[in-house]
Picture 1 (cartoon, rainbow, N blue to C red):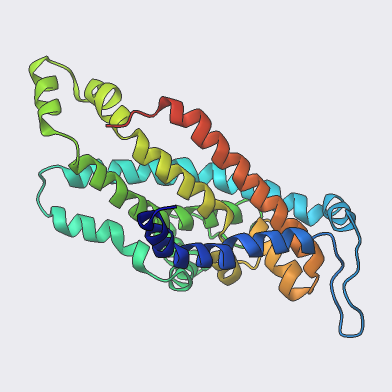
Picture 2 (picture 1 turned 135 degrees about the horizontal axis):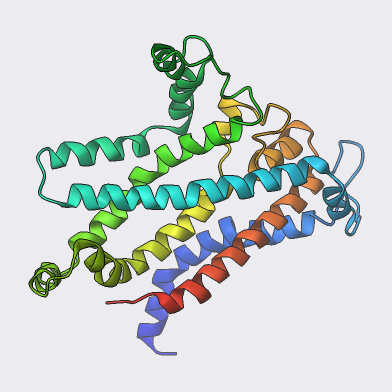
Length: 289
């Protein structure tokens, strides 16, 4: 090995150490812990094999949380990506107050999640919340958005979309500004409509950005816990219990670390599967400049 290669590996060594110490080793340790019981003050952890996974399969709350998370992902991912793209297209044009609009769209992103949850708690509060006040002007009946199992998950979904869309907009805006303006001019000269230009030219060029945003959107959909903790605590009747919140309750409320490790392994496997599908399926339809 020559001197340049040794120098390169030495430069990468701090990153390797941090990656191994804070990512790979905890992941391996979690997989190992999922096959052991939870240690107690007077009893060490013992090997239980697949017992924690059996408990998980028989746990109705886990399946409810998984189903809620899938519906939550189905609601947040397309909505946040579509809204981010629409906002980026809007503020990328030559319009009055463009800088103010960009700031307004991005502001929810920089707000702490706890602050966002408390803001929307005021919006959803029955009787005197903002939505109730506006609905009262039109004679609409009062409704407990977070207390009704049929609307609680949708209410949480709206908050997540509002929080994430501005962040994704920044990536789309950067990608749009990197596209050669001559493409739009050539399309206009050929008489192509705006929709045709978007569908045949702009959207294929934005696919690398969309793939990157899609991976982040999937991860965000399965790691939400702050909003649920502040706004509903998984209620009513586990209607808003997501996987990470269920994991938090099992691991830190009921202190069942073995079962929590098993849930973590399932979450990691699920996210890895989705990421592989995104990269190996969508990457074939992605055009890189």
